[in-house]
Length: 262
Length: 328
Image 1 (tube, rainbow over the protein chains, first blue to last red):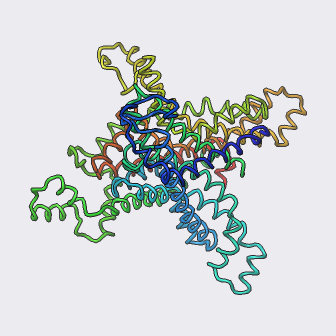
Image 2 (cartoon, helix red, strand yellow):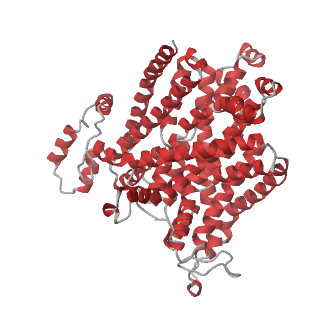
Image 3 (cartoon, rainbow over the protein chains, first blue to last red):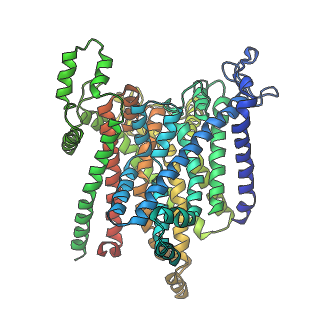
C-alpha cells in the first residue's frame, strides 16, 4: 500500500496535468496541425514526424488526441458539476427537512438508481438527439444519486449538532444554514465522489460517442477517435490503441487520486 | 417460525416495491414527454403523405388529446398489463420483441454475475488474507485498472486479437453459420465459444468492484473479536478464514451483486452492439437509431423493473441467510 501511495498519485497528477494543459492549449496551438491532411503519410505508423501515427486522411493522431482532450474532459467536468449541483440540492433538502420531503426525494433517488445507466441515457438521447450539450445534460441528470445520498447522510449526522442549533437560535433560515454550515462540512466525501464521477463521465462520453450517439463528428472527442479507429482496426492498430489508452490512463489517474484523497 | 418471519419480510418488501414501480413508470413517461412534438408527428415524418384527418384520428386513437394526468393513468394501466404497444418499425408488439431478445441478455448477464462471484470473491479474500504482499498489491492494481477500463475498447482489441489475428474465437453473433447442422453437444460448445469474449468483457468492471469490496469486508471481519476467539481456541488458519471470517464477510456481497445489475444491463448495450448479440441491449441501440419510442419505453421500463427485481431477490437472500434483517 505504501509503495502505491508513493508513485501512484504523483504520476496521476502529472498525467492529469498534461491532459488539462492539452485541454486548455491544444485547440489554440494545434487545431491547424490536427486538421492538416498529409497525403504523403496516410495511415502512417508511429514515427518521428507523427509520434502516434496518422489516420486515413493523413491527420496527426497526437494532435487530434490533444484537441479531443478539451471536449472529453470538458464534457466530464461540466457533467459532474451539474450532477453535484443536483445531488447536493436533493440530498441537502432531504436531510435538512426530513419527513415527507425526505421520503419523496429519497424515493426519487431510489427510482433513478433502478435504471440501467446507459438505458436511461440513451432513451433521453433518443428523444433529445445526440450532441455535446445534450450529452453533458444527460450524464449530469442521471448521475447525481450517489452525491445525493452522501450529502443527505452528512447533513443528517450534522443537523442536531450544537453549532447548527446555535445558528437556528440566532434566526438563520434553512437556506443559510444549509449553505454556510452544513454543505461546507459535507464537502470532503463529495469531492472524492466528484473525482470518481469525472472518471465515470469520461468513460460514459467515450462509450456514447463510440455508439455514435454522443459528441458528433467532426468535433474530435476521444470516443470519436476510437470509433474512427475501429474502421481501420485491421490495418492501423495505433488508431484504436492510443485513444483507448488515453481514456484508460485518464480514468485510472482520477481513480488513483480519489483513492488517495479517501 | 423462521419461514413465517421470512414470509412476512418478503410480503413487506413486495408491498414496498409498488411505489418504486410507479416512480419508474413516471420517469419513463417523463422522458417521452421531453420529446419535441408527439408520437403522431413522429409517424407523420415517416409518412409525409398523411392527411390532416388521419393525423387527428391518430391523435384521438393514441389519446394524445387528453390531459397529461389522464395519459399517464392510461400508460400505467397498460404497463401493468405489460402492454407497451407496437413497434413503429415493423408493427410487432413490443412485448414480443423484448421477449425474443431477453433470453440472450439474461444468459450473458447471468453468466457474468457467476464469473464475478466465482472469481471476484476469492480474489478479494486473497487480498485480505495476504494484505500488503505483492499478490495483494497486484490485485489492487488490477482492480483499479478494471474500474478505469473503457471496456468497449477492450472488447474491440480482444475481438481483433482473438478473432482476426489468431482466429481462435468467433467475433460476432451467438451461433456459427452451420449451427443447425451440429449435434446437440457441438451446438453447446459452439454457443459457449461465442460467449467467451462477451461474458469476459462484461464481467470485468463488476469483478474489479466485488474484489475490492470483498477485500474490505474480509479485513473488517478478520479484525472482529470472534476471530481472535477462534484463533485462541486453536482452530486452523484455514478454518478461521473460511468458516468464521468468510461467512460473515460474504453477506454484504449479496447486496452488491444485486446493485451491479444496472451496470451489467447498461453495459449490454455496448457489448451486444460490438459482438452483434441479438439481445435487449442491441434492440435498445437499434431502437434509439430508429426512434422507435414504444420499444425504447418498454425496454427502459423493463430494464428498471428487472433491476428492482434483482435487488429484491438480493434482499430476500440476505434476509434468508441473516435472521437479524427480517426482524427489523
